Amino acid sequence: MKPELDLRARLKKEVLIGDGAMGTYLYQLGFPVGISFEELNIIRPEVIGDIHRQYADAGAQVLETNTFAANYYKLSKYGLESKVEEINRAAVRIARQAAGESNYVIGTVGSIRGGKRINVSNKELRRYYEQQISALLGEQVDGILLETFFDLDEMRIAQEIVRKNSDLPVICQFAVDNIGRTIDGYSIMDAFSILHQEGADVLGFNCHSGPKGIMGVMAKLNGPLEVPLSVYPNAGLADYVDGEYIYGATPEYFGQSAISFADLGARLIGGCCGTTPDHIAAMAAVMQDYVPSPLAESSVLSEQLVPVIVAEHRAEEREVPAGRPEGPSIVDLVKERHTIIVELDPPRDLDITKFMEGAAALKEAGVDALTLADNSLAVTRMSNMALGHLVLKETGLRPLIHIACRDRNLIGTQSHLMGFDALGIDHVLAVTGDPARFGDLPGASSVYDMTSFEIIRMIKQLNDGVAFSGKPLKQKANFVVGAAFNPNVKHLDKAVQRLEKKIASGADYIMTQPVYDVKLIASIKEATAHLDVPIFIGIMPLASGKNAEYLHNEVPGIQLSDSVRSRMEGLQGEEGRRVGVEIAKELLDVAMDHFNGIYLMTPFMFYEMTATLTNYVKEKSKEQRAHLFHS
Image (cartoon, rainbow, N blue to C red; front, top):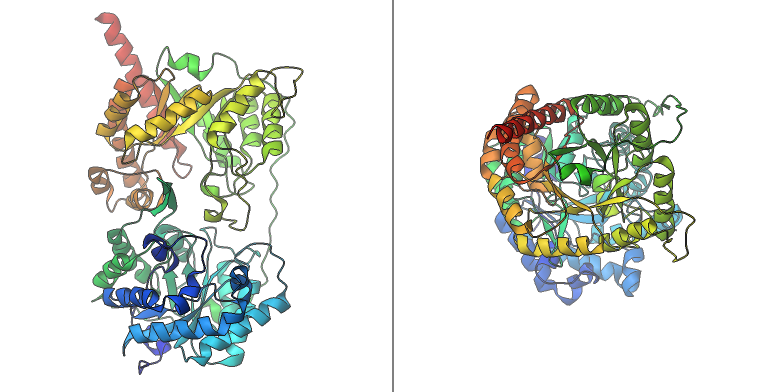
C-alpha cells in the first residue's frame, strides 16, 4: 500500500531517513563481486526482500529499489538485456512488500556512464533510460532517484525522461568530491539551478566520499535553498584487508553526522557504499526529535542562470637548471641523529604560492627532506616531480617524491624515474596508490602494472644500470628507495611480514602511516627491532575535532585512540590546531625514544604546525644529546 502523503509534502516539513547500501551489503553477506546484484530480484527475491525489511526495521522511511544498474547497457554484460522490464518491476514489488503502509518506495536509476568515457551516445542513453524508468513507473513507485551521476549532461537526459512520463517527485544526486564541480565542469550551484528549473524536487549527493566530503560540498552551497537536499554518503573510503573490502565509518559516526547534515539543509538522509542497517538505525535514533528549519522561500536556484566562468591562472614561469641536493642521504643521516621528513601536499589547482611559502618555512625550521605525495587518495594534484624540482632549486631542500603504481604503466614509470634522475631527485617512496575509482576522476583507469614490491625492485634495477626491459643503460641511477608501512592493523605481525618482503625487494628505509597511540609506537619498535633499515614514524597533527573524526572513520589505514578523539572533540580553528600540536608533541616524546626517523605530515597546508613540531624535535634532540654527553 502506498503512503497517503506525497513525498514532496513530507520533505517540506520534516527530515526522513533513507536506507543504506544494497550492493556492498550483499557482498558482506557473501554474494561475490562480479555477479549482477539486480538479477537477484528475480532469482533470489527473498534475499532482497529481507534486506529491505532490515532497513525498514532499522528506521528507514524511504526504501530504494534494487535497480541501480538495471538498465539495458549494464545488464547486457550478464546476458540479461532482455530482462530489463522484468527485473525493474520485480524490484518495486519486493520493496513495496517490505515498506509497509507508511514508508516510501523510490525507483533507483544509476548513472550509465559513471563518469567514464564509454562509447554510449546520448541517443542510446535516452533509449536505455526510457526503458528502465518506464518499467519503474509502471509499478507505481513513489518517486524516482537518479543517483551517482558525475556529469550534468547525463543527469539532464535522465531527468527529462522522468518528467516526460510522470509528475512524481524526482531526486537528483551527484557523486562529487569537495571541489564541488561535476565532471563536465559545472559548479554544483549551477548544476542544481539547471536541474531545479527543469523539474527536480530534491537535490543532493551520494557515494564517492564519506560524510565529511559531502558536508564540505554542502557547506559551500549558497543556502539555505528552497528545495530539500538529500545525502547518502559512503561509510568512508574502502580499505582492502585480508582479501576483503572494509569500510571504516561506524554507525555511531553516522549518527553524529546525520545531525550535521540536517543542520546543513538535508531533508532525506541515508547511506551508500559500506553502510548497513546498523548505520541507518543510528541515524534514525538521533533524528527522532529533530525539528528542521524551514526551507528558504526563494534562493539562487530560482534566479536566472549565470554562465559558468572559467578562469585561467598560470604560475610565473621559472627558468631553473637541474641540480642535486647536497649532503648525505636521509639513510645516512638517520643513523647518526634524529632526522625529520615533512610531507607537504602539492596543490589541487595552479597556484603554488602557499606551497612554496610552506617549503621555505620548513627549510628555515630545519627539516631534512620535504616529501610530496603522488595524487594521494587518487585525488588529482599538481605534479610532484615539477614541484620537487622547484623546491630543490629555490630552497635547496631535499625533495623526497612518492611514486604510485596506480597511474603509470611500465613505460611511463621508467620514463618518470629517468626524469627524476635528470632533475637530481634521488629520494623516492614507492607506494601502491589508492584505486582511481575512489578519487575525483572515478572514470580514470587504475594501471597497476606493478605491485609495490615489484616497483621497488625495478627502481633498484636502475641503480644497477639496467632498464626495466633488461637492456643496459649507459649510466647508473642513484635512487634511495623507501617503502610505506601501515601499523594501524589488527595483526601487526602480519603487517611486519609484508614489510620484510619490501625490504627483501630492496627498500632502503620505511615511512609509516600516522600513529596516534603511544602504546602502538612501542609495539612497532618491538615488532621491527630485527629489521636493519631505518623506520620513520609517522606523526600528523590534528587540525580540529572534525578532522580527527574524519581520519578515524573515513581514511583507510588511520586509527585514533579514544583518548585522542575525546581531547579533540568539538575543537576547531586555532584552538583545534593548538591541541593537535600538543597531542603530536606527546607522541613525539615517545617516538623519539624509540626511533631516530620522524615523519611529520602537514594537515591542510598548515605548515606552521609542522614547522613548530620540527623545532620541537630539534630542541628535544639537542637536549637528549647534551644529557648523553654529560652522563
